[in-house]
Length: 366
Image: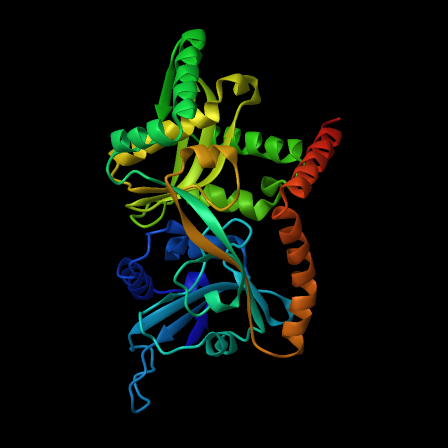
């Protein structure tokens, strides 16, 4: 193995990475492509990639000319504590390895000089790390592989009131504003700025940490908005009422998967549920583009329950190498994680917590 900065990943290695993903049998999530890791590397200097190369039975074949058979992107912190690349915003995480590769998590962490590697959206099928997971979560998805009409037919059965109400609000919004239009891949940078302003206000209003107050996240989104590759492209979708944006979403797409990331809307139009209208039009446009799956991301939300047709599995936890540094990592992380899980798994407590966050948000706005 050799460890490199994302900027030092060669084009040949990136091509091998893409080929491994293409033959993995897993959904083509854009967060697992080299372009995402390279973008994170430009804003997170401690980002690294372990490149695993083939070794012959006689011990040869481990030079630069050997075939790459695996890639492990990560960020390295103090005391050898590592975390998933882009953790905090990345919705799909893990290593990209050739099936059947004889490698253990401990060997991989040792090669990276890591005492622990933390993840919160580990992809299903990551056999090296799933045994270390502390919790398993559903990541709701919309299957549009049979086209939008087939998806709408599913909604008529499982969420008839939702579909009827949302389409009625869309018609009413159009009548009262002079018409609506939807742009699936908007290139106007002003629309992206508007979306980030809406999202920041939403974070503050709901008492949550404003992700766009962190410069690295803002810059990462800007860079990915300009990224155009088959496996990972930024897509900004906007719903307009007349010429005014009323809802928007920025996500990443591959040829077959749209990973939903940052949705927001103008609160002035809240009575029309523009965010829900936006998601329906996104599903329609994505199906027309040949995309078969919209990944709504981990996290409970009523709108996800109404829109979803199924779910993928993702995992949270930490893979560790036994030792004092791993113990420090456990003490710094596990009590808080367990407390969060205790609240999250008890609806009444979760409701109290949400109301408290909303009160904090109202205080911030005063």
